Length: 348
Image (cartoon, rainbow, N blue to C red; front, side, top):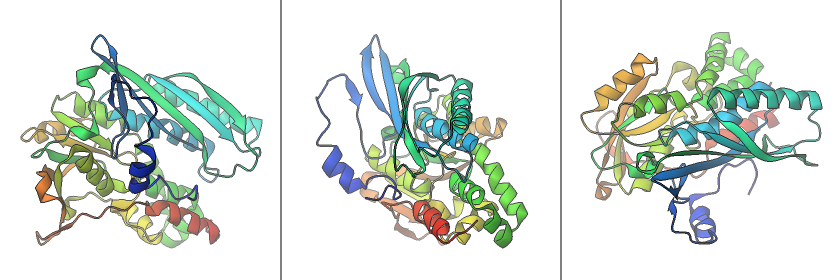
């Protein structure tokens, strides 16, 4: 499997990973699972230890500070689905030999600043250079937190009847990274305004504020952050993890003009590509207006896009004529292929 094709497929995860999870320990209350963002261990005294792991980014065309931002906040977004902020971080850096000491100092300084800003202490890890390393992934990290066990939200706890809220818009991170990585091409083909708007989207790729604000209302049942597979992929994963069905209304999906333009240029569907910065939330019926108002008060856009249903109803995407179609789920996010195709074609 190419290092550029994204996460392991669902079938590979089920067949290769899940049957081989080491020792079975009763205190593990949530282990790995399809569509599950965090694992949780019961550490006693009614406390849970939640943790998540993700790759670290180092994308030269994007920039050192921006790569550090993604390294920190993509993990923090997973942690945010618990309803709490990350407390600790471990970082394993497998750096390319071509990275200068000066550039590493800049990168690590920003990792430090971004962790400090969200209250996460870096508690350890490993740092080294790897010969032949030329990937945009420069290692991996783990974030952890402790919180009252019965207050930790999980993406697998959505129920039939819950309404679905998505924050912000589709394809935030895809559009931002593609525009920032190929600025000359985007400005030439789409204009400087679209390029500037997409660059501004990059600052929205943290969903921690969304999650904490919504959790404070007391009306959330579950959350799942939008990563590979986009908003529709995240909704599908959340439904499958929770053992429920889903109706999503295509016309309600929020897609900004800049994202539409960039994703069309790169020939990908904004609904199905990496969308870090958005959060999918399962909300108690009747409480959606409270959650929406709370987010709006913090200048966070949020939209009701559907509802979870009974499992017998399956996964459905409702079109503008109110006709139901099977909700697609793609094993591979189209963003990866689009990025490297543009790179190979010499887009600047």
